Image (cartoon, rainbow, N blue to C red):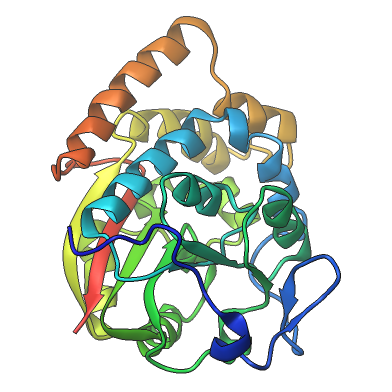
Length: 283
């Protein structure tokens, strides 16, 4: 391991003097702007995160690769939503700050005990170049139309040798009405994602797919019904039920994903899945 991030955090008053901390304990930028994410998207996720096999498995995989690469300081969770990932990393002893432009998500993250929480877009926080050791964008990049601009901003933010951890949805052929409703501009392959980060000055260090059991499930339950006009992504009860399988299906899914997580924890890779997980380093 390269280091230990336990108890490390950000001194925002010196790193980003343009931010102000308000009575609720959240830091705000003076400028606010819209993002490509549903207005109540964080609230919808909050209803299922703590019980969802999908969020639980993603957290386990993210935490394992962050522990493996062990950045030399705290991690900035960019677009961190309700703080589910940040909270999980903090519980693993990894220092973490959350950056989330949506006030619902920022409040939920603060209620989960994440500190500091910044309610702002990346381009509005005014953090000096080369001041952050590590950053995470966990299912965020697909929401940004100009991916190159976003990656270059993060590249400038990081110190030389700094790490960027990424997860994104995989495979354009799995695109569905849910992607449209969620504000996704694209889905990725490992090849297209590594090409994007390399073009922005990063060196890929590790790349794998996740959720190997799910491509046929997503194809049958989301993609094909969307093509036939049968999928209504506004059906929140349907979406919640997909995150909370029961009985034998839940048991089989847990067993398969446990095998996958253990492989990733030991540095192995998964050849396909519905998500990509990449670690890259600033040259």
